[in-house]
Amino acid sequence: MRTTAVIGAGWAGLACAVEATRLGHAVTLFEAAHTPGGRARRVDNMHGLALDNGQHILIGAYTATLQLMRDVGVDVDGVLLRLPLSLRFADGGGLKLPRLPAPLDLLAGIFTARGWTWRDKSSLLRTAVGWRLSGFRCERGTTVADLCAGLTPRVMRELIEPLCVSALNTPVAQSSGEVFLRVLKDALFSGSGGADLLLPRADLGALLPDAAIQWLLERGATVRIGTRVRAISSEVGRWLVDGEAFDQLVLACAPWDAARLVRASNLPADPWCETTEALRFEAIATVYVRGATTLAEPMLALRSDPATAPAQFVFDRSQLGGLQGVLAMVVSANEASREVLEEQVIAQAAAQLGQANLRLVQTVVEKRATFACTPGLARPPSAIAPGLQACGDYVEGPYPATLEGAVLSGLAVARALTTP
Ligand SMILES: Cc1cc2nc3c(=O)[nH]c(=O)nc-3n(C[C@H](O)[C@H](O)[C@H](O)COP(=O)(O)OP(=O)(O)OC[C@H]3O[C@@H](n4cnc5c(N)ncnc54)[C@H](O)[C@@H]3O)c2cc1C
Image (cartoon, rainbow, N blue to C red):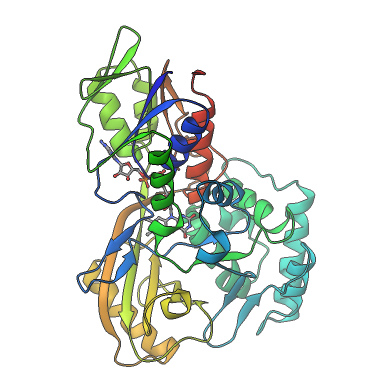
């Protein structure tokens, strides 16, 4: 049996380790942190609450992720609340899709969008038909702002900006039109339920990492949680991981960690390192607050402004299996300091949700949450050297930095390993 080391137990590394084990490889999985899951993991709060490092949304089109969850024994319908796509604001405005087959759901959603004029609706219909006729393709250098030049300001504010920031975590003026169209195509035009929101009603550990680790252990894989790999090197056709030899090696760590390990190994892989090191990142902050009331829906869009009202979405954790009164306010692609964000978000909740006397529970700022998904971005390939591959949300692929992108990349790398 060929031995394979996988470094990193984020969602890409877990997908890779599970698939490689299923294919008959003897897998050893290394994870530096004490909790698996990487950028989508459970964190224990000082009050003993199980919170996440950031509120996550899955969508119906995440077919690989949902299948992987089922394969390792997760009750997908139990841990995820499935709702038709809704970008409703607390004041009732905005778009919500009814339960109809695609693309009738989108058409009906546009016609019934609250607070939209005929001009708003017809601008979106015209633009969406144009995207469909072009096969959801555009020039590499096109931004989302360019793609949406024919849309009214209200459609931009209430649909495109929230969709773009939640999918690409990059402002519309700097986001890749190509990747945005790909996400829209897969979510809205590739079959019923693709755009459904799947909101976690368990902590992120229960969504995949806990069950994947258990599945691996039961099948004889070696799992070393809390073990940071310091160095990799190659020696007569084998790979050394801190001195331990393996036939094949997969770097499933975040791009900055992968590039650091490869650089220090002195492998002839400069172009791969340069492409990886050139990636830029966007932050996501999740501000958990506690108040008295619940929201009208488990998730609402917020009217946001980067300078004064930075949160784009709010989640009512009490409707998602969490504690009564705890709200998760999500601030994407904003560089303001933690203190400024906390103060502004609490004021925003008071103004838009009527939630007075909110108390701060915890704020988690992920400074490098996702790579900035800009037009024409060069992403590194998975192959680094014979027997050495990388997987992760940043590796060449069709999607922005998402759970589905990470899982697809992990599965592809496992299937490209030399057969045992
Ligand atoms: C706050 C936040 C909100 C998000 N929201 C969404 C969302 O709503 N929907 C969505 O689809 N995506 C979302 N994302 C993106 C998603 O979380 C990521 O795309 C995905 O988790 C990346 O997984 P990965 O396995 O590629 O990398 P990572 O999760 O970064 O995993 C890499 C792992 O490698 C480990 N590691 C690194 N170096 C070493 C070493 N030397 N030795 C051993 N282990 C090492 C790390 O500890 C880590 O566990 C969000 C991300 C954040 C941060």
